[in-house]
Image 1: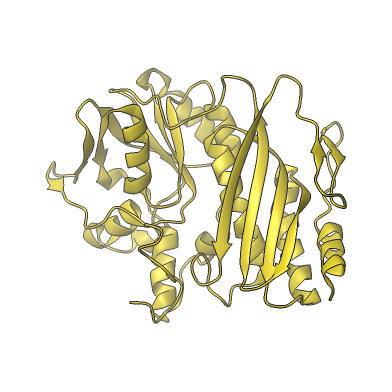
Image 2 (image 1 turned 180 degrees about the horizontal axis):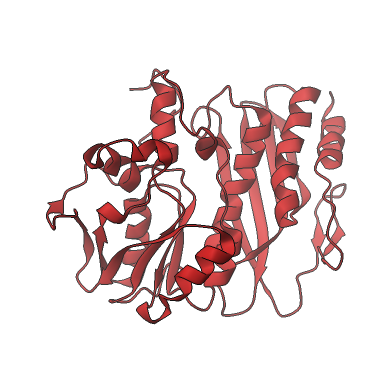
Length: 328
């Protein structure tokens, strides 16, 4: 397949049908040197970008469907953490060869999630080389309504959506050549876009959990100039992790990456909203701690004893090829 044939196949395979009344704002899409987009009136543009490399961010034998799904999902998760509405995406795709079947499955995976969030693919680039996928997601948010990492204050609740540690546990089983429990948590994370929009105007700070709970909470605390207490027996666990004892489970939940849940701080006066949001979204929202004045993160077990974690999370340039079973 030639380059322009590949582009044409991706364009056709990722075409999204928009619901009536949805203004996608694409004035000029794929086919020119750049896209022309119309930002909704009274909105600010929100941009996020991520690169996924084979062997580092996904196993080399991952299906094209799941690669595309995850590439879009992790970017939508960033928009969710900002309280933004997703609208457009730009895709840069590096492939060893232009395989029509691979491109077909990749396009299907992209569309399966793009359709849910009304995301239009409006451009990008294709090249020959080692497999690497870079995607830029663009969204919009009303002025002053964006969520940020700054703003957490002593007394605020520390809340997390969904469950923690499932993707890290699945990865470890994969590396060990064992049956992988709940593999979908690793391959198809769910971006919490609807939750992000609900939090706008209520949450004092927000971030998505991509590198591990402790690492990402530390970003919020540094930006906000405060510390936190975590009650780690309240950390929400997947079905697979719930079968482990607490001491075995906690490291996955505290330091495991790839969860892509939203971690946010909420003034205690809004606590009653958590039950409403949880019911509305059919999503578990767990209060796992509280923001404190003193800097740092203090983890406490159910008996009140202080727990010292072994690690804080994934670090780029120090942990490479994490999907290689033979990596040490």
